[in-house]
Length: 317
Image 1 (cartoon, rainbow, N blue to C red):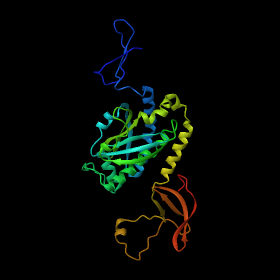
Image 2: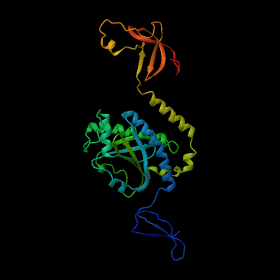
Image 3: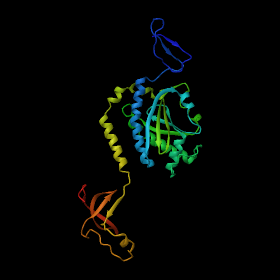
Image 4: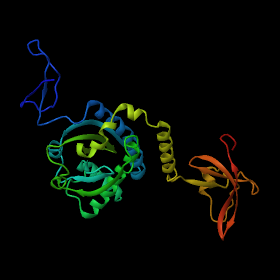
């Protein structure tokens, strides 16, 4: 196939076109060669869609508010083009993905980073946070947040390669995040994130030099030929572990009584209110608004306690 250099184009390969009825030629910019095929970029998109759903669940639990993360785009560009979009000051992490050699870059948009840090430090998470350079304490918190974002990346990549993500550093100045030469091609995965009233982007830059050992595995065939049952089981275990950390209100209900407002206002110390349950009746235990257990009152090591008798199925109480 013939190729001609077109200095005026910056888009890499273009569609083939006939020239004077002869063999079609394809425009190609040798200064900006494509390294990732369209199929490989589509596979990266699918791979990170699953990852985004997991991150949404994890961050929602950590921040105790609804977090929505979704893949916005996956495209290839030079590292110089990517670094030009980095914010200064920003929240930019240099990360490693062992056993892959080299580093990737993860940037959280400054407004989102400040919001997340504010939430973690006990703030209300206002959208009016002033954009500024992060303090040392805030950088430490940001590092933990980045780790939360990367922790489950290994699950999403498992069909391609077993990686161990690690945060090498968190910087506020893009000048300190030059992980590859400016002209090196990279796959840039952009995520949209919405937390409360704040929305922004998170970008993950994967240099070709980092991905080269596994780039041949970035095909839909390899992705779909993975073990979906194993992935489903792993996802189920992760969800189960997260649910076990959720706090719920448990109330032991001794009984109830119906009083008029006049009787209620007339109550004083020493008055007796007759409940609708006898002392020999079991105590109902509510989890949230539902009765789930029955128990007997008692003491344990000098403290009030309940001895569980049985589960209460829905409609039994």
